[in-house]
Image 1 (cartoon, one colour):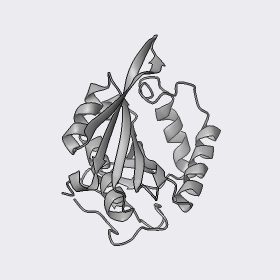
Image 2 (spheres, rainbow, N blue to C red; image 1 turned 180 degrees about the horizontal axis):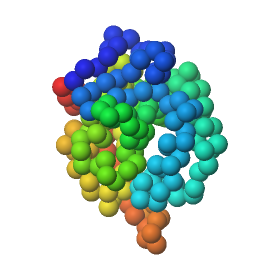
Image 3 (tube, helix red, strand yellow; image 1 turned 30 degrees about the vertical axis):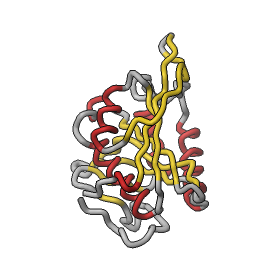
Length: 197
């Protein structure tokens, strides 16, 4: 896998200067304000947000405000969020990021969302995860990356375990949706467990 600019953390991740993290199927790039309309269209579907614990509709203005917030958090080194973009043909697939970064503990939380169901099961999310983990471990010098997922999201659990995450905890009845309480599962990965290629 090609991991561009691997010797330093770029200060900007934008289409204008082509600084991005590229795999064979997808690339990770900065969120831009002109992405807001596409994200709004993809994100405002219940199926896309089923496991994101956020079912209230968002306006394009809400998403633009969130994008600006990601820029400020990146400048402060608190979080790094990216557009997941398919390479051929170019298409926004979703968003991923590292957040709640702790410099003392060298840890961060990870989130990923591929919004359209038709793009699931094609390896886009797996490659985006790999690029994001490589960035976190090899560029941010993180020691541990963790994530949370719903107990019924078995598709995601399979991908996380396949890429090397280990189950490490459970929050019982921590999420309520579709009329039922669900457990939230914790997964994590240490830098020593990450397979770079």
